[in-house]
Picture 1 (cartoon, rainbow, N blue to C red):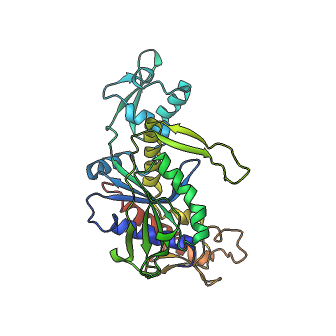
Picture 2: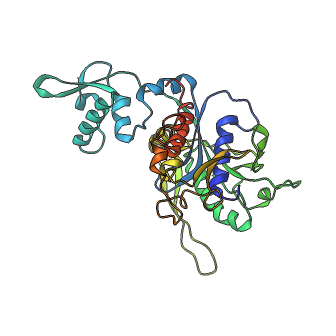
Picture 3: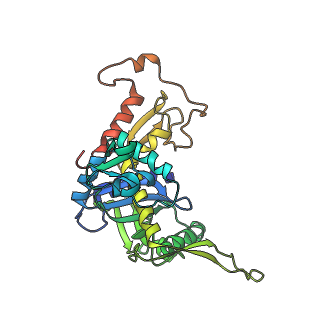
Length: 347
């Protein structure tokens, strides 16, 4: 796996099959990639779930619930009530809440009716479950040399200070040395280290060479806004903000909802599997996209309509029925969707 994208897919595949590292699995997991907040995006996100809660989450469908829908669904009453009396004050205009109520009803998440005086009333169909137990963030760096470690360290320090995730890991390629070089680099000791045997699969393909410190998302966190670079002439102060536990709880649930919807196989949505050169290569570590025209494993950025080698599938391919109804491109998307749905128990 020569690219960070391919390395990331290998880590996601391993986490889906064998998380947590070095231990038996006690709860189901949902794995996603490239998720986070406006200020920080994690390469791999592992959601450790309550089994009963995850099964109950399936009542609300495979699409994510955004912050507006969560406000409605989590607070919908068991008996009919006017929405402005039933729901807590959102801190923004009620017209947006009314839109969210209609959206939730249209998706079958709640019940809605017109009450006395034409007031919009709602009633819950199911209680929203407490399905998220832990959120684990993994930063993927296949070749973590000293320069990459210097660039990565400030990001990890921000993750540890904020405490939005329950644990933070760094995944890097194994070198086979007596002491992995990553352990000698200047990265926060609170971050765990996973060493990955490239092009390998199975529980032993990834080893936890340094355990992370458990973070507490229920406590206030520190959001580092600006940090001076230091030096002889730099006496500026570090700027930071306090992240309240309520904000962290809301963001964690929003991240979990996006992970539930997307999984880690959604990369095909931003690529061109309808290109005649797009194939699926079942490498030993993970099945991943490949380009026959360039004879390489392409990244999402490379596989776009602007690619000079892009050629649409011939119409005859798309008119086929069995075994590739709609053409190879659609068949690949259906395969990835089926694999993603298997990770959502109860659907």
